[in-house]
Amino acid sequence: MTDQDWADLLARRHRGGVYAVVTTGVVCCFGCPARPPLRRNARLFDSREAAQAAGFRACKRCGGQPKTDQPVAWARCSIASAPSLEFP
Image 1 (cartoon, one colour):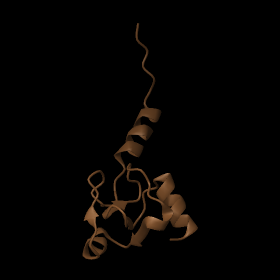
Image 2 (spheres, rainbow, N blue to C red):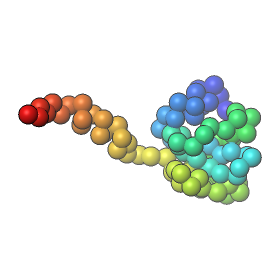
Image 3 (cartoon, one colour):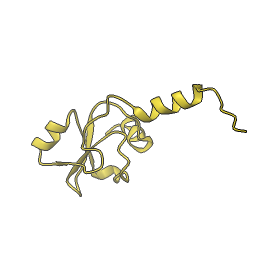
């Protein structure tokens, strides 16, 4: 795992690929809200299927699926661009 991979994992940046945690046996996508593992326990895979073939199961929080759409980011942009409402 490179320093950039580790930084992306800690920052919960959505990107391609997944990481597996050896001690728990789960596979998570980058951006998963679960607590990050110790660096020595994390392994990188290209896909959830590859990690599952290696014996890991999908995370119950993120499903181990990289997110292609980012609804939270979309909502933030929509709210920021909306006209302010004034109530009497």
